[in-house]
Amino acid sequence: GFTFAELLLVLTLLLVISGLVLPPVMRMMADQPLKEAAERTRSQIATVRLKALDSSAAWQFRFEPGGRHYLWLPQELNAPASGGSGSGAANNAAANSTLGPTFGELPKGIQFLSDINGVPLTVERLPQAMVAGLSNGYEMLQVGWSAPMTFQPDGSAVDAELAVIDARDRQIRLAVRGFTGGVTVSHIENRRR
Image (cartoon, rainbow, N blue to C red; front, side):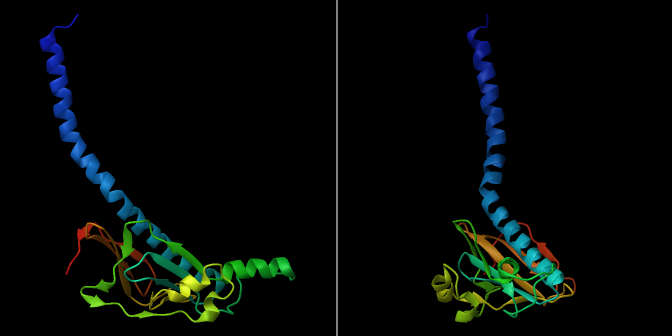
């Protein structure tokens, strides 16, 4: 068997090791929601760029400064559908699902920053025609949206920046490079005021 001193030594070693390992693991777990929100936003912006490339039409991405909502839709509501030929109700339904506004929401506790480097972002309401026929259309009309980040059919955009922030005032910044439409994501940093 084992003596009491040997068991006590093993338990002490386990406590010391867990004390060294636990704080970094807890910090990583606390960072995860913010990182996932930034990655989700980056992915959605990249999707909008691909929609513009595939459809040969300009597409826009908007977000709710100080809120959790985002959306993307064609710059022109009557933009041509990408790919495929044919006619009939099935083709029209596919075109409408491809071209209509698509909404999303960041996880609870994460929101878009309402300013960039202390400069408040301008907000605007969507025209009713953009959300007509959507189940949450009335709710989307009440949201103050950012100016559009527009992606051209060649994949280019205008330089833009946004950030997601958590309840602990830590942020991840996302920058859209105009020439390529590429998105870069920063590391987690404390919010600059």
